[in-house]
Image 1 (cartoon, helix red, strand yellow):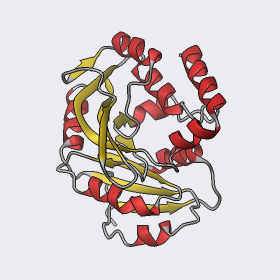
Image 2 (image 1 turned 135 degrees about the vertical axis):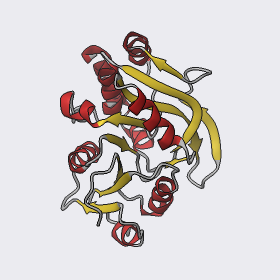
Image 3 (image 1 turned 180 degrees about the vertical axis):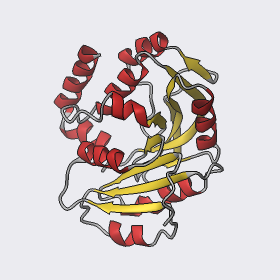
Image 4 (image 1 turned 90 degrees about the vertical axis):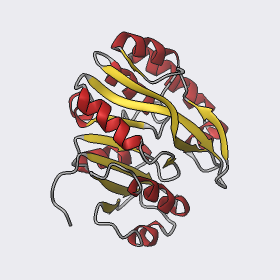
Length: 241
């Protein structure tokens, strides 16, 4: 295994998503920019995730399985702590990258301007069976860099960041914070807001990631069974920010 630190770490949380895992990881391995590692974070899945992960033959892919189910936010945080890259990207195993150049474009933006905390783009909905749907998270008609005030003002009104489409500096997590465990639905929204406070944020209008909607996704589970928690989180994020 290559022991050199990669520039980018992809953290791929996986729980009962073995049937999507290879598709997700392949979309990463196919990137035009190749200086990265992939951490598959298996949250003690009861399916065949270990077998699927072992079938991915690339030395940059590292597989970790939790001894017990930690829940999605703790699993994210464990992955962040294990990652070695200067830049960190969390993408769930049921999502995938849509453009081969997305990582290259993000890295160029972040390497060019050290005041940019993270980069994100619009996304495209993907159905459970792989059909394209509507565009999501398109908040401008052009690529641009938001100032801190512009971004936070927009972000506090609604979460503008498509979940699988953000690459952030490691320093955002080490100096500002990991995913808050008491915001299970909106923890990522909170982090984008605080990461953007006092920093620039790069936005790309092309939908370069796929965000998959299916019955087993966290979004579907919360919307259909725990709507009161969604309301709590949405109020709490605004209050904290």
